[in-house]
Amino acid sequence: QAKQGGRDTSRFFTPQMNADALVRLELEMALRDALDNEEFVLHYQPKVHLGTGRVVGVEALLRWQRPGHGLVSPADFIPVLEECGLMVRAGDWVIASVCRQIRLWRASGIGDVQVAVNIAQRQFIEGDLEAEIARVLAGNDIPAHLLELELTESSLMANTAHTVAVLQGLRRRGLQISVDDFGTGYSSLAYLRRFPVDKLKIDIAFIRDITSRPDDAAITLAIIGLAHSLKLEVIAEGVETAAQLAFLQGHGCDQIQGYYFSRPLPLAALEVLLREGHALPPVTAMATAADA
Ligand code: C2E
Ligand code: MG
Ligand code: MG
Ligand code: MG
Image 1: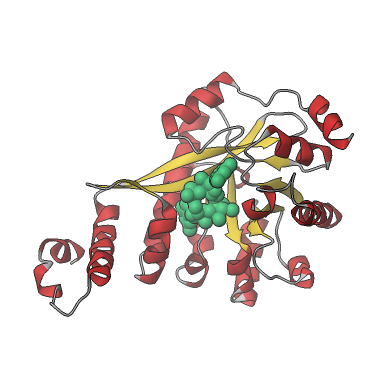
Image 2: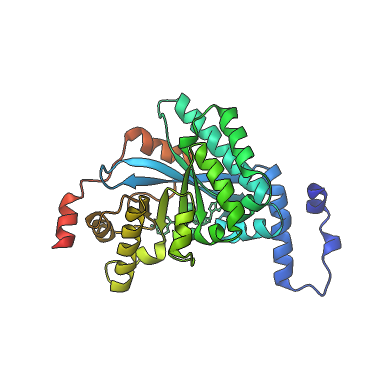
């Protein structure tokens, strides 16, 4: 049915439609075909532990190789997937692809790699996320702790009772749960205590000017303190400079992710990085300088 829509598009177009609506309609129809035509691909961005400087995992980030358009960024198509009812199918594809990749890495010289997957709110509401994940983990014969789920603060806050129940089930199976873009939603701290989560990801918005804006530095320190007093791990997103890294290292942040260490990489480039065992240079000296 989607295939037919892709071929016979003319009957949808009427003179009254403006150019934006046409572009949007074309986008929707192209996305319907994208899954069948295997146009989606995953890039992977490393997460680095600041204590050891070592890569402790990667985040899978969805890209769309749209014919005639090059590589399309998720910001431009994830909202459309959500609106036209394709998010669960696309999300299932991401989970299946990641678990397959984890299995292949275990079978190769690379070994165990923990991979984080971004989960859209829709995936919690529609479908049975826990059953789907359990099925794919078993199908690939991989342990649950190698899969981490990232949920944004705002998707956690919607539909809370159901979300808490699903997360509890997943966590009981051994999956890691992270709160993405933390600080940009408006979860009350009381709510945070109720959610079965393991890690907070400080949003890039606070990290960007961390060394020049005292407010952003203060918020970041508050999030690090909050995470640790709730016995959660904390990771900073969007670290691009040595100065940002030194600040975070000096103030006890557990992990970082960002262009400073590595951009999101296509599979082959990530495998080179993992095989060569790239690590951050020792940062103790920098951290001392930042505190002085
Ligand atoms: P996110 O999960 O918060 O991912 C972080 C985004 O920041 C990524 O953008 C990443 O490429 C970018 N980034 C990483 N380090 C730096 C840095 O140092 N500087 C800057 N300026 N940016 C950095 P990307 O890949 O375009 O993804 C955007 C968003 O799309 C993600 O935000 C996530 O919310 C969503 N997304 C990506 N893949 C998926 C997916 O498979 N499923 C779902 N539901 N959402 C996804
Ligand atoms: Mg994320
Ligand atoms: Mg984020
Ligand atoms: Mg984001």
